[in-house]
Amino acid sequence: MVMAAAVPLRPDCDAAALRTLATQSRDPDQTRRLLALATIYEGQPRSEAARVGCVTLQSVRDWVVRFTAQGPAGLINGKAPGRRAILNETQRAALRAIVEQGPIPAIHGVVRWRLVDLIAWLWEEFRLSISQQTLSRELRAMNYRKLSARPRHYAKNEHAADVFKKRSPTAWRRSQRRSAASR
Image 1 (cartoon, rainbow, N blue to C red):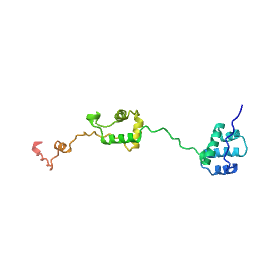
Image 2: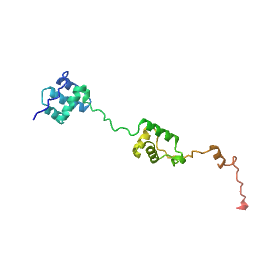
Image 3: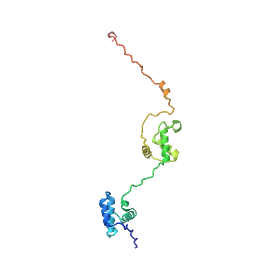
Image 4: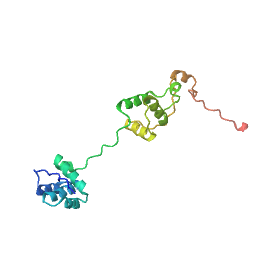
């Protein structure tokens, strides 16, 4: 069985320098990796470095590649990129505009937006399938909160509504005292 050649380490470092960096590091994973690589610099086999790092030989090889390319900073765990966002900026802008505008009952068939209504609108507009939880998270990211307000008719006339309001008399009158005979 032919074994592949070992990936070479950086020539500008040595075991003492890596051990010094390991004592200064505040990241425990980086410290463990630096100590494992220091073992290799001392001439130990990579299987010994894997034992020191409590990992497999493949992980040690990955550390060597990252250390050679990026130096000690390459041994720090980075943040995972995560899943790509479902809504792009154009779709977010359209969603913001439709929420700000509010529904028109004759067109949208609702008097206030619910998540299920916005999900249906996103499907009709962009052919985009999205869950209620994800849409709620997107709306919260746009600084919208779930409010249960009274719906307001889009054609409400404030001046016409004043005519139908009941008003209390402007001056209260005191009721008359009853006489002792009427009791």
